[in-house]
Image (tube, rainbow, N blue to C red; front, side, top):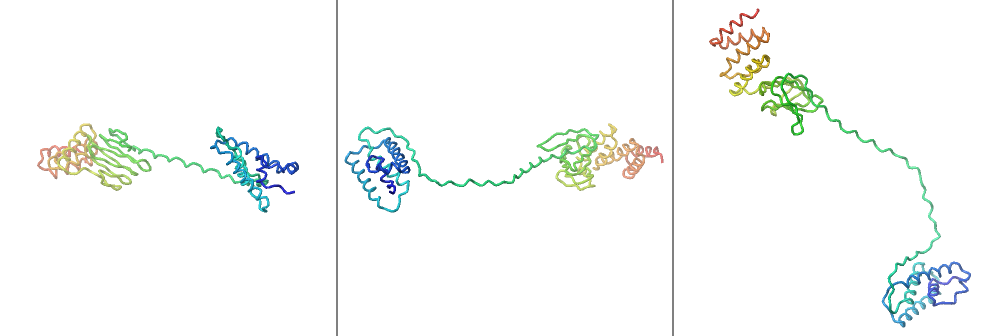
Length: 319
């Protein structure tokens, strides 16, 4: 004997069919299905739905059972999901309350059973790729070196840049393979980057800037290696350089005094600057240079009030 359709099993679970007891006694499959249908009916009775009259409920039940009986002779089987839906429909019709609706409940609908077992996933050995080593942090370049200095200076950072303020004396700064540095002398700014530069200042005045290696910028004018910058030859500059030279001479900074006097080229101070430059060379013990400077002074200013003093100093220099 073949198993009844799912529709007939649903009808039996709802109490509308009673001629399958003999079959159920020997069929484990249909027995499990009946138990499942009865559980669905029990849960469906907990739904809160609008009341229907008894004649209407009986008419819907009769229609559902008639369809189930007609499908008994069909060869195609209805899927388990459709059967569950029909059983739930019958249960709702028969259990439809006439008056007091029950509180709603959540019904967990079981899905169709399946005997298929998926094969276990195949696990293969995955090569372990080591994580790349983190990139090393960039190393900040070393600050520019003060190769030599006998001057008065200050070093700080201005707008994040290493800055040296030179007030007096000489300075050799080396920024090759080091961080760039800015040197400020009075109102003159020298940018030193990947280069070696010598500077001379007197009384906060830039006297000379000499590029020893690489290139530098003086007030945005680029100087190549071997070039020397001096302030512009104006009357104001010449007066400032003469005052700076005289100050350095009194402080016995003879080399700085000579460099400053040499920049006082305006006619207003040129005569005195030439004489005192020769005096500075003589006091520094640079006899040959002193002789040359006295002779040049006498040749340029033979009628100077300082001519006799220059001749006397020249005669005192050992030949």
